[in-house]
Image (cartoon, rainbow, N blue to C red):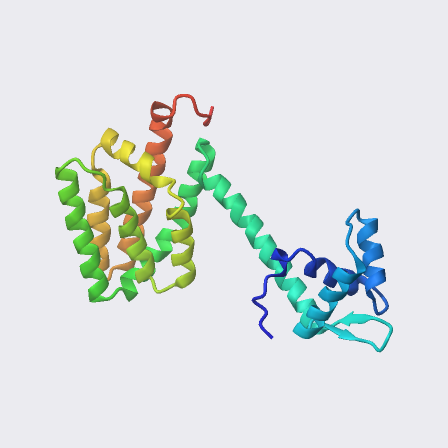
Length: 251
């Protein structure tokens, strides 16, 4: 049976499964209606009966003669899956709140997370990057240089460069973690402001990282990536209030 079914999205199925899972005896529709009523939830016996039949068809419940139904091992697995999925959704919401925040401490926490992720993606990419991926990064750097000369935004090119390195690491977990952070858009606006304020030194870091990757030098790729993110953290700390005078930050 497909465990990808998300019973969190169903109005009744998860509640009914949990009631039966908690019951020491086989449970019928009237028992379930009574429990739901005690929780302030009004539902008819007919509705519960239909849900029970569907859950039995799915293999989540099994009928015990006329005594009612008990939950199956598959039913318990579905509840566990649903609870894990809800927990992950809660974590994602919390992460989105931090990443989209205009609080300096939260912004720096994101950069610390990037530092932890990207030092490893750079190190791994130096060992695993293909010639095709190197060519793609080189094209990004060339495009970036052209955009800088024309005083245009390079924020998306910056994300593409770092994303390309994460992908080249061949570690899908690290790549996914970087993409979660980068696609939420925290870096782009401030990155442009910082670049204009301190000059385009970030491009120099990109060139050094690229050279280390091309030479398959893991230690240097990691070192330059750490220096790059460290410089970003320093600049955010130094110029935060200049760009966000009315926003909270470190005292």
